[in-house]
Amino acid sequence: MYEILFDLNGILADLDAIHIEAWRKILAEIKDNKLLIDREFYDKNISGELKRDMYLELAQHLNIEKSSCIIFEDSISGVEAAVAVQMKCIEIMISAKKETLELHVYGTWRTVKNF
Image (cartoon, rainbow, N blue to C red):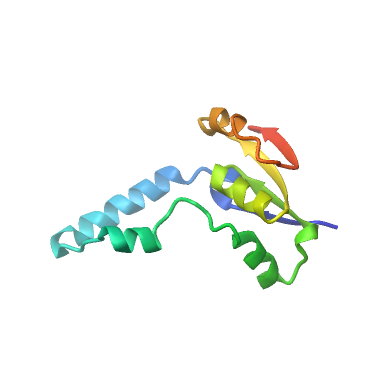
């Protein structure tokens, strides 16, 4: 039996438009407060890349063996993270990311074109 792990955005739903609208509202509310995010804060706390050991931490938190996990990923950093910790990874090639992902065969277990 396998445990399925996935990121909601991009795999089951496209939430980009919702995220953009939410950020617009947040930024409109805080712009007068002169809230600044400097480079040090950004580098330490904000990143589009996944931590390499994120999936191991998740498996430990869920009390499941990494050998029983199948990761569904549509991002290069997510695929790299899953493969780096030797978990089975199904790479989902979605729209604009397809060409980029096709160039990077990172040792995924399976590859699925947009469905």
